[in-house]
Image (cartoon, rainbow, N blue to C red; front, side):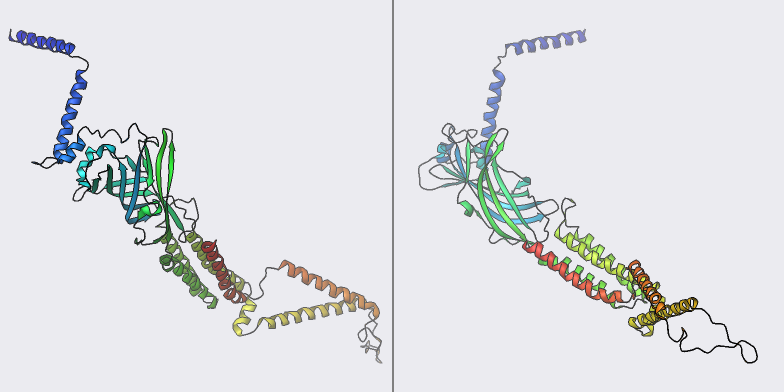
Length: 481
């Protein structure tokens, strides 16, 4: 029985609530929203003011009937907003992320005809009262991360002048993207920008301008950076075109030049000294195989380590070759070439054991050439003599008084004494054939090295001279072109 009564009571409540919902008019929810919104604004205003205090009569008069959701001159054309910047610091410039982090003071000025009051003094208000005023919706275009400083309170300034001019200043730290061209790194110059735009108001509602032109940005003259120096800076005014319309835009350009002294001491000098160290092997005897191999391999490995360390502070993108990569590649090529030079010289030495022995015995190359020329001449003379003997008839030996054949003494008219005119032509043909064979052998052995020890002598001159010429071309191109 008790349960039946409870169910009847619940059913009655449900009917009553349904009947009340049907009796509530459609404008009632809007009325409730406006009511609570006014309560929230009054509570916010009271929260901004200290307990026991009230706003001065001048502020109360200005705030009476003021609507912060409507911009100034709502029906009388766009409102003009002047801006100026003070660069407090540029903390970091990252080539890996291609951005920079800066702390700036952003100052904005505009005129609000609703804030005109009598007097000759400006009103400096607490920064927290900015919630009661209309402010431009300015934002930084390429900002990756930004924040407003709030120690000990939010770093905002609001000042109202008698003619209705409002000064609004902020202290912001922002990380802004900067597209960098690193093809001449570290002899490069980078141009970065700081772009300010209006988020919701187009050029028909708000117009931006620099208050003092290029002098609207200050603080760069006293700025000191770790690897850069600020060479030039200027401002410009433009419009940002989007699908939703054209919006006002202010751009601050500044050019940064990298200081190369650090990279000269950190990378260029060590790599150049490694190249010079690899040339020491040219003055070491070719018989000292461990010494020359140790110098070559050590310099190659050290150069590889230096190249890897130089790339740690650079972006991983391989879309362009940097100037420092070119120089390290040149140094690595010279060091590797010195190691290959010894391999070639040692290989040629193994294929010239006779000349090698003469070299270690203190003989010179021209002595070996003279001996070889003498041997060839002797072989040629012997071959020609044997040919003449075969062509000439052999006389029968004359009998001796005892009836035995004896040796016939040569007569003045014999071929051994005086060659006939008919044998001159075969001799010339033989010498001509030998010269042709010699030329053919030289053409076949054009890459043959007669003395491998001359390779080191040539390398002592060609390697340093080539390195100096390449350095002159490198620095001329990247510094002046």
